Amino acid sequence: MFLHGYGAQILSGTWETVKLALLSLLVAFVLGLLGASAKLFGNGVLRGIARAYTTLIRGVPDLVLMLLIFFSIQMGLNEITDMLGMEVVDIDPFYAGVLTIGFIYGAYFAETFRGAFLAVPRGQLEAARAYGMRSGQVFRRVLFPQMMRFALPGIGNNWQVVLKATALVSIIGLTDLVQVTQSAGRATSSMFLFICVAGVIYLVLTSVSNIVLWWLERKYSAGVREAQL
Image 1 (tube, helix red, strand yellow):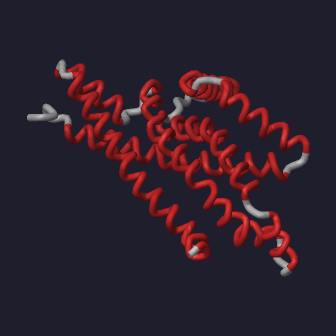
Image 2 (cartoon, helix red, strand yellow):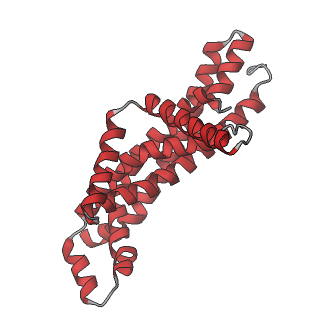
Image 3 (tube, one colour):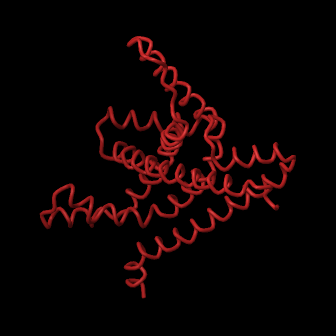
């Protein structure tokens, strides 16, 4: 057989990778919004925390950060369980991967959203307030939709990187696409074949993502394009 009977395991590893990427994207998206809001609208303390967060994350390699965060969390849990006299709790590699990747790429999303917020014309926000909208309404109805139009190209790039960064999680024990294909390659002495299979699957996932992102860009830019005609 072409995949030497590892087809089902590769499919399961691919699904694990997709779930990991989507949940990590959600965490990064939320942290990015919080970070951008803190930099633009927060007080001095919040701005300082947001700057330190983005500076630290963007200055240290992802692999190093992943190992530091994963083992720091595990060491912290071990200390807590020792203090309480409980059994050692092992971190689930999947949720550890979600939190770690989301935390890392939240810094990149923060910069993407900050630039998008600044690109929204201030006059539109002032007009919304003049109509009597509260701050929450201004954000939901005016600022966020406009910001998304400017942020989508950056979000697309960050999503592609997040998707490919899931390959790093195999080092903390998650049975994802990379780990499955590596195990299959070692067991069958066909490492090149299975690495190529992993590469093709990642290429398919990123290609599908490009289609979705193209549709989202058309959706958020529809009114602007009509106005330009």
